[in-house]
Image (tube, rainbow, N blue to C red; front, top):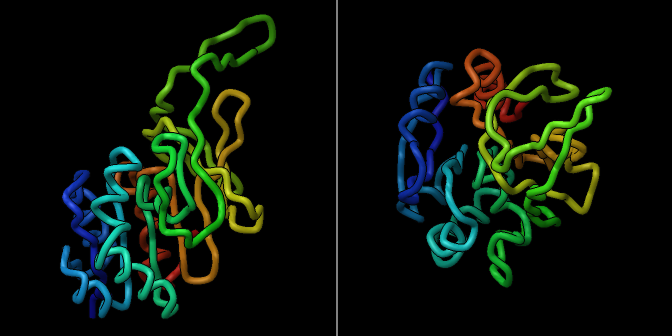
Length: 207
């Protein structure tokens, strides 16, 4: 029997690709924006793209945010993807004064616009956003990223995997108990992404 999960539909991002990826690894996916239905769900995924402040307004504040906190506090598996991972933290430089879910301590910072990668005798200016494939450790897999902001957790123990862009090592995936988050897009990461989603689906964990 397919494992059931709820994909939060907060009106942002291409959720259809996330849904297809989970179906491909054996999930029965229900998309919902109903706080009551989400609160009753035993496995929840929050995915999407967008700006931190408006995402807080749609997701964190009000009944939907309370439903997400209820799922997390109950101990059911929860996965945040991209902006869904960033919202787990306290806030972001992208939207000063706007508070996230406060599930994990830390904040999101912007990649500097003047980053330079030095390779032997050559220098290469690094573009923002960080876009494309990047190696993730210690998984040893390559995943697809699209982001200008990265999470800086207060607790190193919350960092599950890291990636490096120019001279900045950042959290590519995080975990604390039943809560997981990834900055990369597993639905765009081909077989590596499917393995990540399958691990979460089957074991309530990722990686």
